[in-house]
Image (cartoon, rainbow, N blue to C red):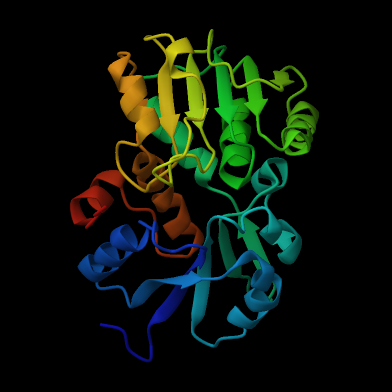
Length: 277
């Protein structure tokens, strides 16, 4: 039940048709009797800089989840940005501080890495490839570096975006070997599709799946369907994998803590969730 006392958490992005987060947060709020709701708000990129300050003028706004295409743009619009978000160059969570300033953080990478480690995969001293260096890919790359990977390859059709991320990672992690310019998945223990490829039925695969070794662990961020064409092709080669919503479930406890609602277990969130595709 939404009422006049309900705390609004905006889910900002475009298009909203692929959003899964409300199907996790809102059942959990209802289960716990918390007077809050996550509301999808479709905002196109060209309107975002004007819309965001007005959103946080609302008296009942509590925070915002930020997704494509706004994660990178939000860095410049926040008053305070966490170290994690600065290294990633992207933001996915916003709240008002006690002084009224807009505070930003990034949890995508934390969620992705927690999911991979929870499936028994080792990251320390391994080699990883991240395809897509926008908001989510940058966050995943930063968290993989924090987790101790020895070598990190980055690829994006926008070469300047990949190079900029590489420079930030090298500055923060001088011992990390960072390379750019190729999406060839051969020779990596972990490969990640952090690009939007897979959201549309006619999208090409983000990399040559025939070049992925069956022992490689494969990660996906697209949530349009549980088994994207990329994951299906990797699974057919015998690869273990992580679906897009796994990253979402794993990061939500950190989000909820950021918003002041405590830190529930992933198991509790999964038990209450009402995910559909």
